[in-house]
Amino acid sequence: METGTADERAMLPSPFTYNDAQRRGMSDRRLYALRDSGAIESIGWGLFRWAEDGELTDPDLLEISVRAPEATLCLTTALARHGLTDQIPAAIDIALPRGRRRPQVRVPVSWHLFAPGSFSIGQERLALYQTHGIGIYNAERCLIDAFRLRRWEGPELGNEALRRWLRRPGTQPSSLLRMAREFPRTEKSLRHALEVLL
Image (tube, rainbow, N blue to C red):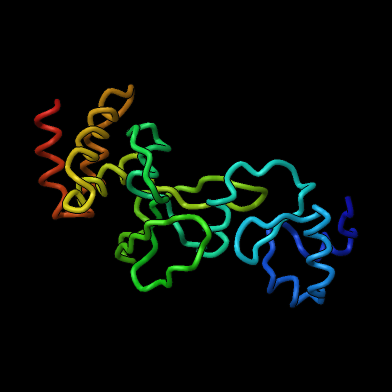
């Protein structure tokens, strides 16, 4: 298997785009020779990584994070990562601030546009690969969003996730309600669901 030279690896750290390679002077012929030999592998449209960099556990999320740096896992996808639902969504639920462009990616994505003013509330970082990561909402924000968007997501998603969350040791409904104050139209329904379940 052909490998990239030390200079090539230094100028193009993983992952890199086709445009990155072009800007740094790599010819199409060299790029595709590296791909065809297995030295680099495609992880999305025009997106590559060096094969010898080790195992890549989630190329789909890496592609999304490179194409949309503000992308944040939300709703069913994030609830599943937090162990609060058994549902497996047909597409990855990704939030972007309203007004941002939704990029083209290879994997099925359900894009959700959230208000810029509240976009970062409850946002954490999920490590993916080397220095790359993707945003993910914490469990409390996911619960709030499931109630906030129940008209589209269905009421059972939020109710079941809330039941599971309450069974976990150390959960504090007061912290959930504190965060819910940032979403006034949701706070009342969430407070009512807590009163029923507690």
